[in-house]
Length: 298
Image (cartoon, rainbow, N blue to C red; front, side, top):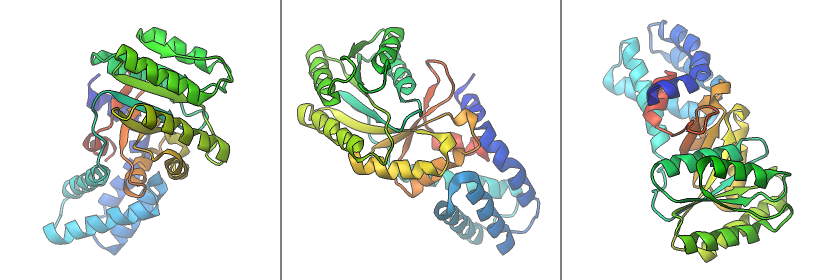
């Protein structure tokens, strides 16, 4: 299956949620106030959110007035262009090596599985990958990450359950520098974003990386379950306060019609979506492409 086909399949439910409403809307034939009001309503009910929906409609109005769009296809192409613009206005962080990813998120979003897929992604590119089992709270978390390390034939730094996560991360950073691993991926305990002590622990872990590996390209990635819809924005806001999030990984997109949430994440929270999960297999992770997304849902 080609990349576009895979992405199209992942966003199938989102497209279905939009399709009938948009088809009915475009069939009206007139780009009047009623058309734009109805489009805004469709976007809001598709998890795009009020602020971003208003911005999309504003831009489409402007484009319509300037270029005199007439056909349904013209309007659809303009809408795709606008979605692509919104998703690319927030610049993605550059990738250079050595690269360190700190993976954070709430319970149940699929962080550990995502780490396993990322390890495969970078191993396939020829990089030397080290996993760091910074989740020392959840029973068998280290064992689960070790299984992913074994599947990918990559190294792992692990410690016993209940160990200080910051100490585990320190050991991992020291090991990576000594052995020349150029990609380090750090797992962390799933946490509720309203638990202050756990969020403070993330800050502590992050300082361990910056203080002990200043030459690394250090990025903090928030894993979000796409089925949470607009609640994702709250997660972005609160985790960003703790560790200054650099990008988003969206999981479980194939199981939801709420894929529209990628738009307010970029437009309102100014955080780029970097990767999306596209299934359950080890290679089911893709770098997010804004235009492919726009083409897949409109």
